[in-house]
Amino acid sequence: MLAKEKIIDALKRVKDRDLNKSIVEIGGIRNIKINEDRVSLKIAVSKMGTGAQMELQQEIVQIVKNEGASSVGLRFDQLSDDEIEAAGGFPKPKYEGPALLNPESPTTFIAVTSGKGGVGKSTVSVNLATSLVRLGKRVGIIDADIYGFSVPDMMGIDERPQVVENRILPVERFGVKVISMGFFVENNAPVIWRGPMLGKMINQFFTDVEWGELDYLILDLPPGTGDVALDIHKMLPHSKEILVSTPHATAAFVAARAGTMAIKTHHEILGIVENMAYFESELTGEKEYVFGKGGGDRLSEELKTEILGRIPLGQPELDEEEFAPSIYSESDKIGAVYIEIAKRVIEKTKRKTKA
Image (cartoon, rainbow, N blue to C red; front, side):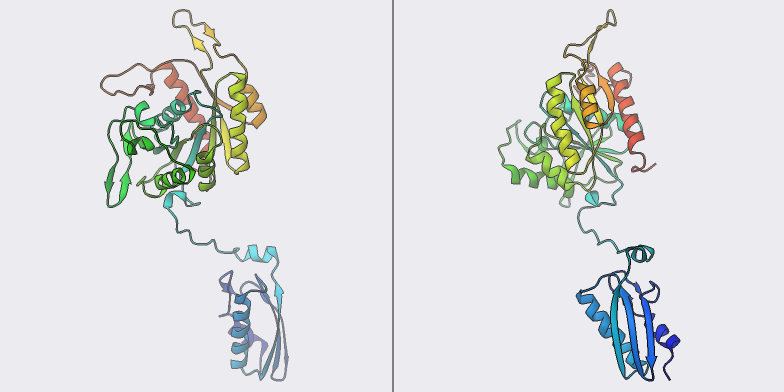
């Protein structure tokens, strides 16, 4: 004689195809009725109307018949969202792309951008990168300003990346791993490429470069909201954004466009760096606001974010032994400002990075 307990025990080996768990374990058996050797079942599944449901139906009917049923009536029901969540939810699809772009990657991407050129975006990028290294972080930088690449020159890099087993090894300088379009052109030649070729090159910077383990990858984006910036925003699984502007009202106005693009592509704005905020006299200590005041504050209000730091006008002291025309030392006043900005960045992203 057919027994309900025996049928349930037999059905323990039947798995919901989408949750990959037994239909008994997930509470999928809603009802069983036995009338002599005829069995009626109501089974709840995670997804209805699929090919997997048809497979499940055939398997259940065969198992119940093997237990002695002459006929099997089967109806399906839908598991509730709460039941699906209690069962562990749907397994995430296996990621097969480059490790750096894996949504589970521990690397925090920080895109440094501006609304217009000439506001010191690349200077902020390289000094933020070196400051994060000084604070013990593992850092890389992609010079993604394809038409206006300048990071190698700013950091005093005069060597090229090496290629080992079809993998590009980034150049390391001041502890920062660097890759730039500048490494792949001769004699500072202009890059005359259209959007699709640029996108392919940027993609190679993520897929073909041996970055190793990074806490942060800084992306020095081209100014504005053109193809390259948009491609990168779409390519990254998650990204933070730092906007660079001067105190001038127009610079802040156009920077807002870049910030709006970040928001629309679901990336988080970390804050604003107001560059060339003032000039401080070495003789008197007096501050002169050469480019005006208030642009950064208006931008932060518009985008509902904070000002990470204000960088005064200045120039690093050149060290002939470690020539890097745009890198400030830790002991420099401006270098100290960058350290404080880097500390704030770490504080705001500490949930994402490794200790």
